[in-house]
Length: 427
Image (tube, rainbow, N blue to C red; front, side):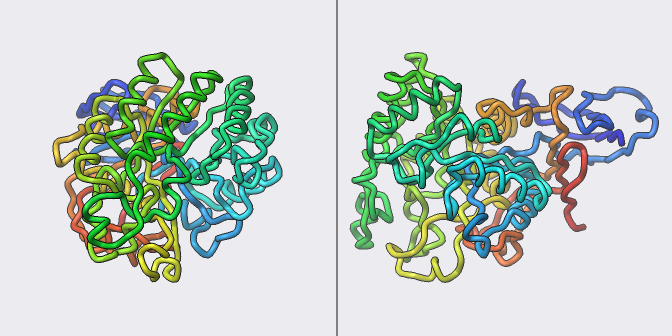
């Protein structure tokens, strides 16, 4: 069925433009292009956007889903529903499951499960080493054959540089993308906050921002040695940025991302040991937050992701240093990003370049743009609509959001995947 979106603010992350106009979706679920005719195409369904924003659906890189092993925290069904309500049309799922996604059989299983349970697209990263234990690399070639889009051990940083260099060399020969978590594992072990006066006053175990720089420097040296394609999943400190800049200037095939929480929160939000604000890596200083925003605006950092990490009540209702790290974010991703827009840091096209186009391009996916022929994965939203965040209204099984009770702006009105509507906001 042909669809005509009329009177929309079209957010184009490729041209970095925002224009008022109409958009046609072809009956095969792809974008046909803009429409300037006096009448709708014959047989088209007309959707009046009322001057609201129409953008490519978010491609969320780094989502934790609890299948297999932790389905009580999040299932493919609940994650897909939360994503659709948050304007996320493609989930890039992490392999830190129980067991890890480290064999072709496990990857095929979760791919089938996701396709049957989720209203949005789900693609999977696979583990870089078996069991994510950093000792023996996985069957990268076979995993690529069954659909792995990248390889990562997530937060289980491989401390053995020889093992990592071998994996990078093999990945380069296959054109596979390695995703690293830039942290020195020794320094960051057991840390709950970033070192500084605030951590000392609270008496919490802390890690220096230098741990991120040291981890990144090691990974980039191995990239230079092996020629691998590499993506740093979360750059959160100012001290890591010079190393990233040097790698880019040297022509290494390196990109970087950051998390929406580290762009919108800082170490003081931990307050009186509020465990919903315990993240990996820990929240940083305000100076770090501002430096990372500037790097994102410049294009030095390419990707914003939610790093959606569901945790049950029991694992969060513990002393701060013992509580599970992470926060759910599929539904809060877009409104949190609007804080950067309303604060004058990034335009809407810049935001969607980092949330949709850049992750899709780096992973070799056709999503994330409004170009003719691209999949009609779209989100219609009102960037100015205010609301009070209530975690118990989230569609995720877990409710561990740091934005509970916060006043936010940005409401998703509708979400389409391949031209089919998968979410419509209640009136």
